[in-house]
Amino acid sequence: MSEDKKPVDKGLLVVYTGNGKGKTTASLGMVVRAVGYNWNICIIQFVKGSWKYGELKGLKRLEPNVELHLVGEGFVGIIDDKKEFAEHQKAAQEGVAFAIEKIKSDKYQLVILDELNIAADLKLITKEDVLALLDACSEKQHLVITGRNAPDYLIEKADLVTEMKEIKHPYQDGILAQKGIDW
Image 1: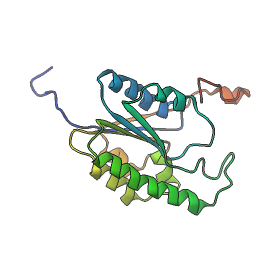
Image 2: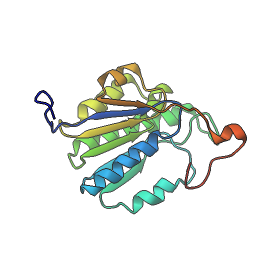
Image 3: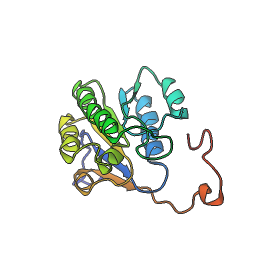
Image 4: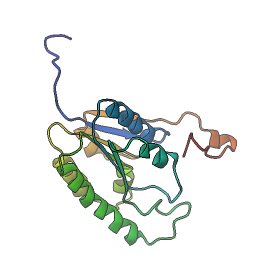
């Protein structure tokens, strides 16, 4: 390591975005790594469907280090959604308040806000809500935010941004989502 590059014990803001698959999966890879160091992790999922995902079962195996909280009302305006937009919006805003409470508890070294970018893009939450989440973090706490369409202001504030780009997808060949791979 060169003299101008020194290790820093600083919490990072990590953003996984883009139209390709793998944003949540990348964040869960960080969970596995962090559990290896006996960290406490809080995952809060903002927009997911009512389906039973494999990650729900898999993360239970990482307790007590990992907590998973579902705060959304499912996919908004697609697939099996029959709820009013206001119901989704209320759940997302309550999710922001819940996430701030969890972040400020100072119990977690890593907090993942899964699909927060989607919640912002769909106008379920505001820019002010997102900034309040960032402000809630301590100096040493790592925050990971996932979802398509990350807002420019979040990308600008982030320490690390990775864009998942779809090049090829099995759905293009008529292959539906696969258990253990996609859900």
